[in-house]
Image (cartoon, rainbow, N blue to C red):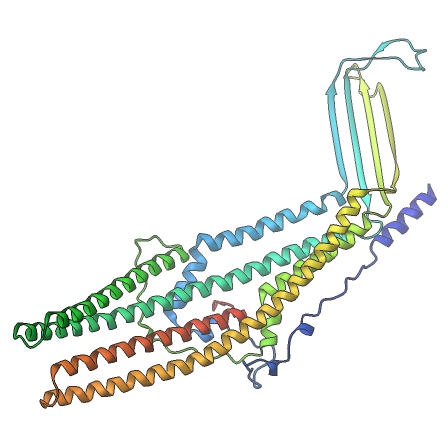
Length: 461
């Protein structure tokens, strides 16, 4: 017995031995900071990552995002899912813990045994049994499975953080879209009023016989097209309002807080951040890394499933015909149980599957790193080139405004006709819409960049 306890002690000590898993080096797959178009600020700490509010400092938008995070059923479902994962993670470790089961039954039967010289006798009616079973962690398999469960929970935490980033950016995207639609409706309303004056002018010329009906109809079609565009923008605005109400968990009938027009919102600036630092902290990348670690732990534990295992069992059975004598017949046993899986096709298939999955997770991890690099570069270049497009659109808008101002002065002096004034006004409104659309693009590109950098929302305490 002393030898057995010595062996048991050595086994338990051996099970505590550390089985290190080769660490994953995300940085080795990232280009140098100077390779990115986006550059950091040398005055900032290398780990300094700005928040979402730093890039989009709008109080009304922040209030709406805060409401969404507190009220949205969609977001609350993400949080609830994390709790489910935390709770269910214990299932994979259940078999590593000691188990104890008992049972009690009432049965009728007869028996013949050598001890009774094979004379038939009644089997005791009341039967009870107990079984204690514990598989010792001989190779560290259960430790690996425990680590895989920890990684699974970590993955879900990172996925929750990534979902939060996507959620706040989706709210912001709809917010800026509504702001642009509001401003476009104002421009279109002015354009419609101008075209109505033009149509009146051509109606007078038609009545005076100075123009034909075709010319009047052409101007009428222009007016109808403007009204059609206004109806389209109004529809898109109403749908966007429903969307943002849904995102923030508000009933449809509730009014949104006042949203300014897009030209009243300051343009976002490029964040001063080192992209490699941001990528190493991006939650979806860390989720993939945790998934890879989980699969590596599972693969290693699957290898140990093909190794011999050591367990400890205790069992007892009692039978009686009289409840006052519970141990009329009984049997008890205890001791170590060795299991030698000499040939187990199922476990070999599980190991091969675990290895294949580890390779798959590794490739997925690499793929999302390269995708993240692509997203940062694409959104950065789009933002920079979009600002150039906006500058050209604004230059054109300012030029047509200057022309319109000059035409108005000349019209008051009687040097140009009302028709020329109305034409210049339409051109100004047209370039105004182009400027608005270019401005909206900058916000969209900035949101894409913010999301690709994984900029988080942090509430001030």
